[in-house]
Image 1 (cartoon, rainbow, N blue to C red):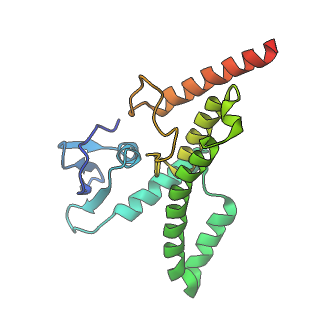
Image 2 (tube, rainbow, N blue to C red):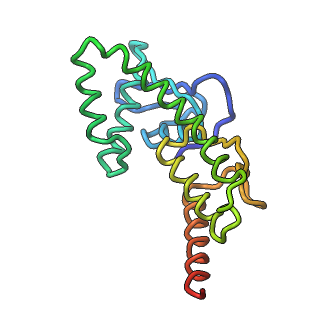
Amino acid sequence: MAKAHPDTSEPLLIKRYASRRLYNTETSDYVTLEDIAGFIRTGREVKIVDLKSGDDLTRQYLLQIIAEHESRGDTILPIAVLNDLVRSYATQNGSVVPDFLTMSFEMLKQGQSKMVENMTAMNPMARMPGFEAMRAQQEVFLKAMTGGLGSQWSGPGADAPEGEGDDRSAAEELDEIKRQLAELQSKLSRM
């Protein structure tokens, strides 16, 4: 499993040996693709280089991580988007696609905090029983859709519930949402 690393502006350097094993230069141990995905989920940038040639292999390994998640059913990319990406490699408009994707993800990250802010600010539904459970579920959905991008909310309601740290696992958050939904269902059935 991925080990915690201090926040740093430098990417975590991973070296690929001739045996195809991946070596974490900070912790002096071997890592898996899932470990690398874990580093990225926690906000750490990575750089993967071939030890012998010095070639940057980061893109290749990131695509492999995405392909593995997609093949396991963790689908985020609709078929139409995948088809369009394949088409973009064959057209001269391909150079526009990276810029478009970058801008789209930036807009999505910025939109997340606005959406949460709009859900809570001056919203009469915010006083409705169970609204907090729905808001928490929406946050988990947005994090899942963006792979954790922009997970630091800046709008109202952005703080974790009192008494809980920022490093709660996704499973703990999901369990909390399930508990809140069960409470909501119980209240509704009593009405």
